[in-house]
Length: 192
Image 1 (cartoon, rainbow, N blue to C red):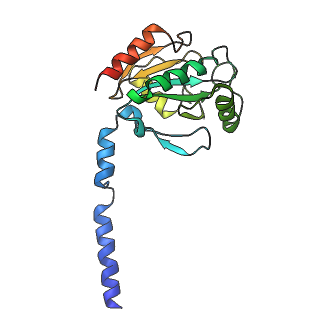
Image 2 (cartoon, helix red, strand yellow):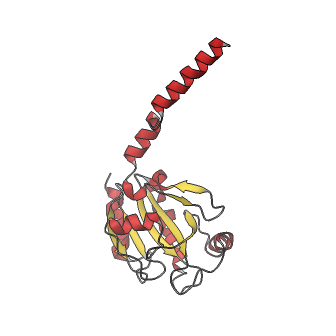
Image 3 (cartoon, one colour):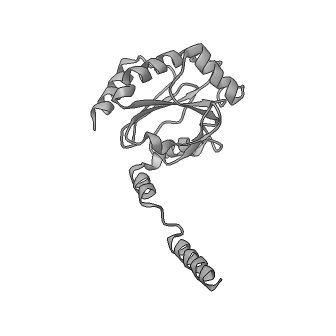
């Protein structure tokens, strides 16, 4: 019995010494993840938490989306961009938002089905959230703090380079096939 108690106390001591110290793999992941991506958001399809650090080292196009907007057809172009440049390191991250004109009224599962069934969206989509004002999610707040322009409407785009720095912001009227946007993406992809 005394041996058991000694062993028990030994493990308590070890765990208290290691408390708050991340494991080496976790510490390396945290060091490689830029502050702009150091956020957890819920996936659209099933609301499973996703750490955005999984996209560290990629060129990222962040887009706030809505299902009932005049710009909703941009889903098609965003998916084409993602398919064309994915192998080179581009990822499109879609954030469903109901901030503008109440044009995203549905539940997450309904939005996910619409995106997949109507536009064949395969790029990562995240649960409905706010992207402006005091209620905006922490990721969008960090983007604004890093110099991104706040969205003024649905399908506003923010381009991040491989190090997580904001390259530029693009208003809704800039479509995914816009030559300046594609040139900026290609420049960011060329940087290793």
